Image 1 (cartoon, rainbow, N blue to C red):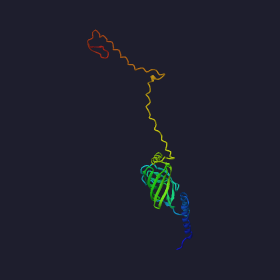
Image 2 (cartoon, one colour):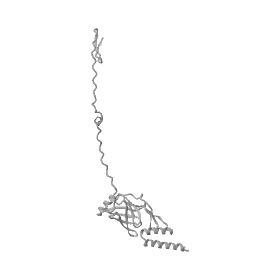
Image 3 (cartoon, one colour):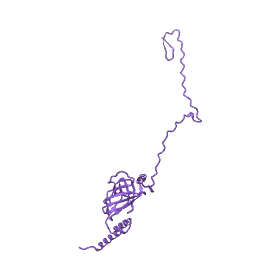
Image 4 (cartoon, rainbow, N blue to C red):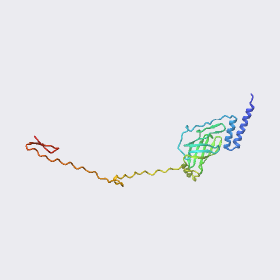
Length: 243
């Protein structure tokens, strides 16, 4: 069996370059350089085996909900109600493509003021998170490939007032967290006073009480004729009705 020596040499050189990129460069630079070299050498990239955010149920909202930057790879994630999903895309372990909306952290739970635990899915291990006064999270993961540390740098707090209160509850003074402006409640609306009657306004004639019409005068009695044989009285006119 023959071996394609140029291809084998290219793969070997690529492996060396990837190793040097991972060891010698800063984490974020190693991430980008490794991805570039892998693409140039034809290293296959496949979607990471991660669930999307629509298939992982939310839990309760947390003070740390919001957008964060992973300092080691300079990529953004969003923590939202018990899980975190990717906002940016990145390459994990040189071949696994993490795409936006893929869940990278799940089961985020508050264990005390400023303290949280979770499961880091790409690193495959339990994570502890500690909030600092600047509102950043120091994360330690007991991963499948060994312990790992990174910092989630706060970019956008979903609930800035709750985050500030959480930092205070942990015994620290919040630094650089501007609470969202709170719109004061409008003053209660009171009923306007009743409009005065027109007669009491300047320049208006006075209002007179309604007048009662005088009763119609009773009809004067009419004397019956001399030869009248009275049989009754007309109730309307009061005249004598003769036979």
